[in-house]
Image (cartoon, rainbow, N blue to C red; front, side, top):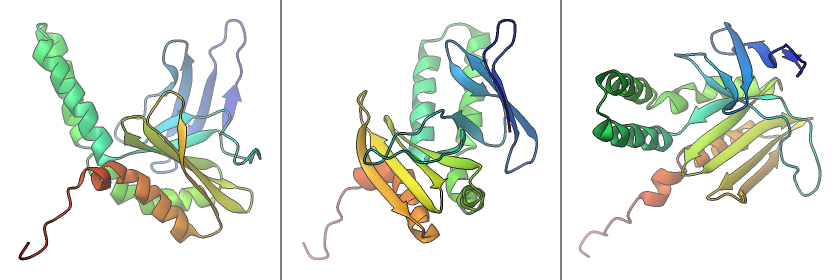
Length: 197
């Protein structure tokens, strides 16, 4: 992984190989959008320069996190694009929005399917996982020295801590990631009526 710092006349960027497809990914810094990477059809990535401390203690963490978007988060983005389409008069822009919807809809089920592979990548310590749950809820998991650390935040501008894990068990890490991947599905499910009630 190479990092090019901010210098006059140079574009800050981070270049690395995608752990899934082994193709080169280039993350470029943009003042309005932050760190972005074009790596269509595979993973999205987040560059996190400093992960939050756990109980005042800072841990070693990777610079790049692989993004796992929950199905709820994908559907939330699709709904927003559909709302934009209904207000859009320009046919060219409307066509781009429809293309974006199809691309997003193809991601439904991707996170659960790729999770075992991504957990193997996390074991190496070079990448972490960022779970995008939706509605401003997200979680981070990474290898911090000999153990794995995980933090989940939710619901607002102040990023309230919602969950925490520090373990050497990959099963616990997997359960933590799954919990946040399916956070809204569990929250929004209505209780079922009992037989004969």
